[in-house]
Image (spheres, each protein chain N blue to C red):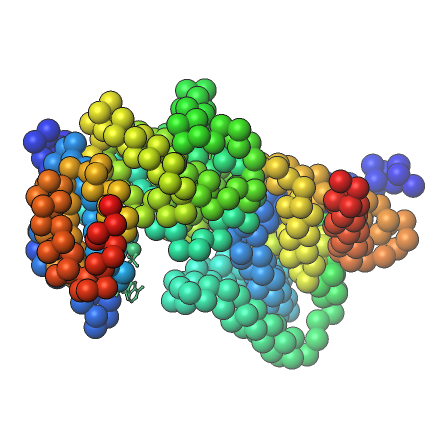
Length: 279
Length: 255
Ligand SMILES: Nc1ncnc2c1ncn2[C@@H]1O[C@H](COP(=O)(O)OP(=O)(O)OP(=O)(O)O)[C@@H](O)[C@H]1O
Ligand SMILES: [Mg+2]
């Protein structure tokens, strides 16, 4: 069974993609959660979904676009959505999370309308919604490698700026940190990550992989660095175990990964409770 | 353009500020020389925090000019010269999963510069400053485990770690116990003597503060008094009476 993962190309692609997603989602997730923007991923994933639908519609109607991966339309929509969220956050300064339902319903509305225009798609939309192993292609993997490289590079280069802006935006500003550009760039990265991850975990479940490992990590981490590190460990565990069981049992990969992530969270909460009781 | 030595550290010329309709600051002329330690006094809502934010460029003046180290605010880039402790209005920082060390180190972000990483000397500086505010044994604890006053000292350390030339403190001693307040002012005095730091502090504890500062500014929309702490102490009752009205008598006679 395990040998299959090396034998078949699509499984190898899936495995590599999974490992990359398990690395970048919790990193971005940590910054999102401490800024109380964890729902952002949800909002953006729905916009991405409408982008994918738009991509499918265009490739169905216009021959020229037939070969274009709908994923790229998803990315495009997601990035536009993230810029729009930044704009809305500025307009509603004291209700920053209001930007998220606005963008979420826009995405979902657009999605349903596009589906109705297309009168359904023959391509398997289900895989974009919930994630499906067999659909991961080489092209998907390359897109993900590109996004992951940019995310990791960014976090390596401007970790201290990201920390400062997340912890105290006003102080960061007074320290001369270009907080506007950093915020914008960060949101673009979140958007790209969501779009690039959706083949594996699916659009509807990507926000779970961004938030659940961090939620568990927050319970036990002793520092910000540790929060990120533990979150990565939990996310990788969820992805690897989730993929393995999904393939073994023929379950939806996204759902299986999320169930593992939830289990980890419950175990962490349980262990913490037992420890507190024993003290 | 480099700041000349004789330039005022802070200079406000005919500055006005209003939030929509409400005029908060009116015709403020004010300057700070190198090495000044000025205390800002005024009742709640008198515009003290607004004044700080104006000169930090966090709010734009409606009218008038603000200069820092001889440069107009729009051209000023040397932000690592300035340390700031904001007024803490029930901040949600406590839940943030960071240690004292990490938060204090974030005070170096401007000084170290984009794309650069902290080095040994920076980490050493962080430990030094944390020791000065008396939190060494909390260095690697999450800030959520600190008391309100200890957290406030973390913010003070964060402002000090980059060794700023100008330190702006908006009610930094709220929630800090009596003994630590003394230590805190001692610390400020030694920083002033060692590095010639220029400082500006807002405090409602007029009695304690005026013993340490050398200049006082009284603010209530306009600048009511701006002079040496000595002159202030002499006319102290009259000035406060005029600014606060009768309600302040108790406070004024406290020290
Ligand atoms: N964001 C805002 N929008 C509108 N008005 C504001 C805003 N912030 C402050 N104000 C008003 O500006 C005035 C000055 O506020 P400021 O915070 O500068 O006072 P302060 O002197 O620092 O008071 P305190 O001693 O309570 O800290 C107040 O009357 C307040 O109502
Ligand atoms: Mg104030």
